[in-house]
Amino acid sequence: MSLSSEIARILMEMLADSGSTEIQRNELAQTLGCVPSQINYVISSRFTPEHGYIVESRRGGGGYIKITRLQLDADKMIMHAVNSVGSAIDYMSCRAFVLNLTQQNLIKKEAAQLILAAISENSLRPLPPEYRDTVRASIFKQMLLSAANVNE
Image (tube, rainbow, N blue to C red; front, side, top):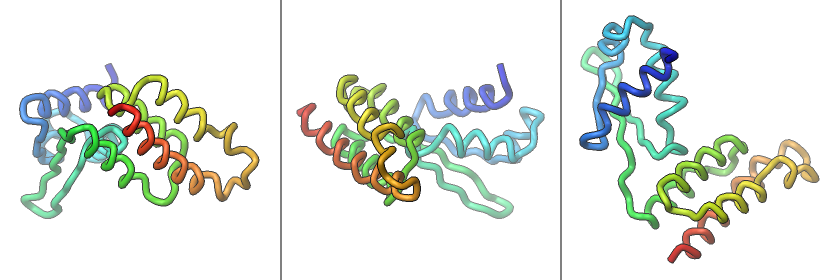
């Protein structure tokens, strides 16, 4: 198992009971025998809004990182995803959102497949590259809202 996977596993275990955990990055790094930046990498790549997490941090001597797994009802979770997208988004970030929402049974597998097809690079190929992520964000948000209404 890679170090990143081990760090993620430990953090997931810490989140399992309450859905939230606070860590001191330096202490965890020392326990695992790695550098603190490795902890940062895992948190920034695996505990993102796209994956259904909120990460807060406080710097300084008593600083900490707080990771919270979102425990929202379906409508609020969809709205969190829509609001997290911003004005532009790449395909891989959209895919992470879709997979997370599908795993939580917030959108159906068929809707997920349609969303991914609509926002794919092939679908947006006629657009100049500099506009694709902006158009993708707009399409993605509208499709999420529609998929949420279909599930009702």
